[in-house]
Image (cartoon, rainbow, N blue to C red):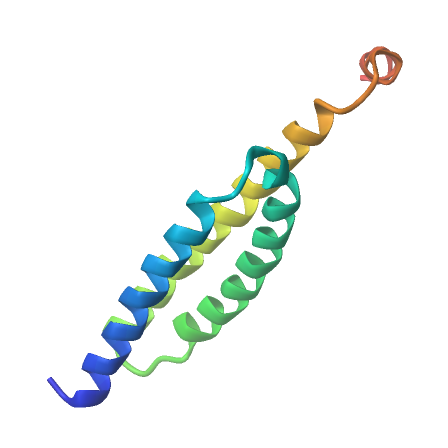
Length: 103
């Protein structure tokens, strides 16, 4: 295994560990703003994964790019669904009643 691949694996593992540590220490009051920022980052990841999937270097990079596209899409859609659900909790009773009459 070339030294660049070992370095890339090390950076990937370190980024995963640091990301887990940062996210696990977020207080509950900050989850909605954090989800909005995470959705933006996931959107950028989605664009990058589309580039990786379409680069056609070899079969492995295309497969990994496709998995990345699927994962990033699920993350973006799920993040927006959770953010919408959390924002609905902050609506007043009058807004909720008016919303039900429109549907």
